Image (cartoon, rainbow, N blue to C red; front, side, top):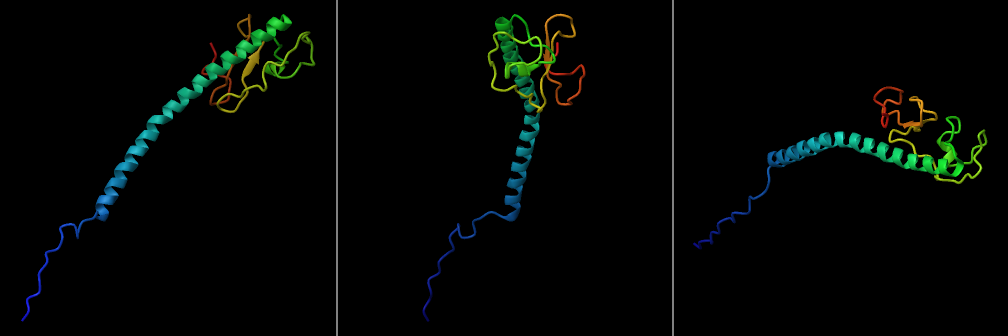
Length: 143
């Protein structure tokens, strides 16, 4: 009788991951991704507020340039559109120049509010209505 050679199985023959281990790792990844998204939600609001501030600064600079060229700011009726197209209503600017390609919208997709003269009596008001889109005390860019 011939004795067959006995070979022990390799210790790696049964190696692998169980379904439980794979599901555990996927669960941990899901929790980490979910918490990262939750933490970033607040940063989006901060970024929108920062954009409102920089838009207001840019528009204000163009309004001051308009005033230097024409000796007055656009009226409330002419609005910010006076920076893009020449106003046809009185007072018509003498030395009009296109200062912006288009009037930017706020981060929530609405137009910025422009009033001249402002509510305080002097100067002008320029602000965003914010995420609610309604006139209130929490509007962005309002002093």
